[in-house]
Image (cartoon, rainbow, N blue to C red; front, side):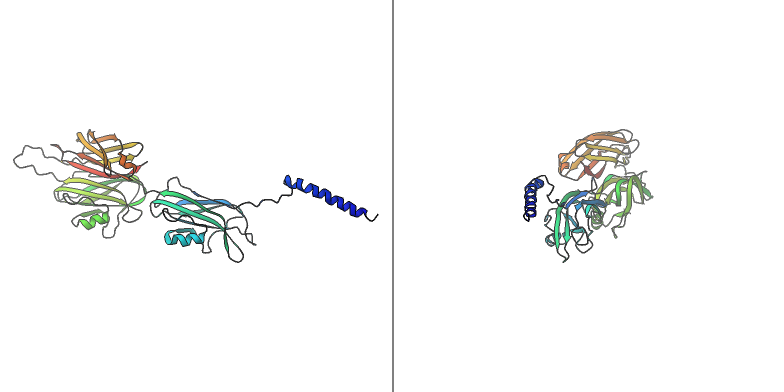
Length: 390
């Protein structure tokens, strides 16, 4: 009788031993898998642009990693591509990249904890320059003794930062310029962010307009500033549009060139430029030809230009109300160019051109309209640098 409890317990153990493999097979006794930490990075902007802050989104899931239930820390940096890639952890990345990186969430005790659970962390970044950038991010847990361990990452994403968009820059005279009498210069602009416009006028026949206002001021001591202060590298603030800005000057009779630049968001970063030839007064008639009609400036102006790699080039321009005839229009990128004749009717012209192949590699194109000269109107050429659209 004393062996019955022993036999009963032994039978229960044998039954349980037989059931264990089956329970494990169907997952009843399998330990619940711990959710893995995850990290993704996204750029919340379809076309990042220099000078316009954009939102970066870091999201995923995380688990508690210390005794206080605090989730892992998010660390992230951004830097130009072309150097070192994302390293295994934040400390190694800092050592490898040096001062090239900008810390979005840095390892100085101010990095935000994520979770536990799903998380969504945002950061604002204002690109200081154009070009391709790389973002590296890590989730790192911290033990009670202060040691760090990566639980997710490195996660990375690259994106391109474009230049500010200047869709219009045209310069002209609303009225004919008379010698030694104040006359106005009109500037029509359209930009997608706050930029700076500077302009200067000088007698024609010297050096061409330089690449920037500061360089032009250094090369041409005889010019007169119309907009901006070359000594302080300042200009007229412009934004939106189309808007019109006016400048006033007084010059003796003769041919002149007006140089104009739109710069920003940093000093000496030129986003668009324009060269406009004008004539102040009526040119003297050639000797022994009093019967020749005194020509005046045709007052050419490019009022709307769009250069697209895919959709071609569309050019609209204007001139004096009585200007009628043909002028030459060209668009060029580097050494590649396309040109054609355009008919001017009552001071207006418009045409479409094929965009040169060279514009596939260039970010800007040069558009030029040239009136060849006639008995009634002087020869004049106007040019404009335009950003090439895709």
